[in-house]
Amino acid sequence: MSNRASESASESEAKPRSPRPEADQATKRQMIDAAVACILDRGFYRASSNEIARRAGVTWGVIQYHFGTREALMLAVLEDGASRFAELVETAQIEGDTAVERLEQLLDILVAHYGTPEYLAYMQILLNMDHDPSTSTQVRETLRSLAEHSSNNVRRLLRDALGPGRANGDLATTMFLALRGFAVSQQLLDTMAYDTVATKTDRAKGQRRLLTQILGSYLEQSSS
Picture 1 (spheres, rainbow, N blue to C red):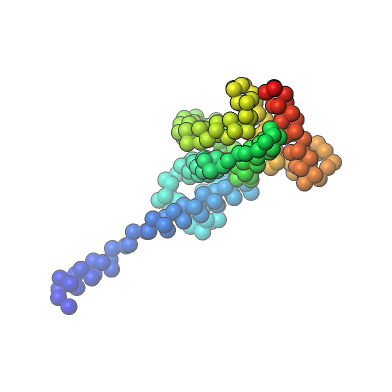
Picture 2: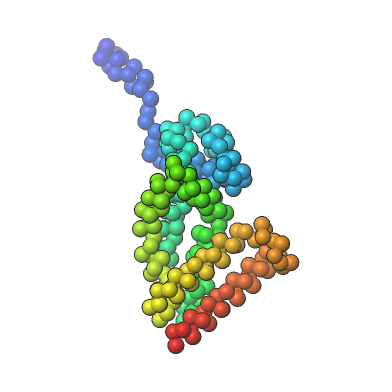
């Protein structure tokens, strides 16, 4: 082997290979999932950088490499949740002959996001970082930017669900808030179990059916 070839081979061996983009994304996914799990288990403030790193199977240095700070990682968790919601509403469709059928489908879509344990982690991040002067501006800017990717599709779904009632902007907003609030409440049933003697499953089914029937009946009456 020539000297030049030997030098090239030595340089090639000495230079660390850059991580593949797929590997980087997989590592980020691990850290985001670990952050969510840690928040759900221990709460926002006790979800320390070291604990998140331990759960993700990486070092704190790896988290710093990808995100820089714990706050930036938490923002990435918010961005990930918002991106998932944007993908959900982009592909969702609502069809049905009655208002109750359409509202049931809309509720299914909202429960798929707002009714998950992950959403409770997003809420902890949002509430804590939004009230922190050092991060509140960045949190609000991040959420405003991400909302632009889902707002049009959310409005489309509301129009499809409300039918003729979609002309009433206040009605559309109220329907969305009522259904979203119900979806979030599904993750709080264990915590709020003192308010009824019914089982969680019975409550969820019964309340869900009753809610869509009440809102659907009102929607049909207001549109007639």
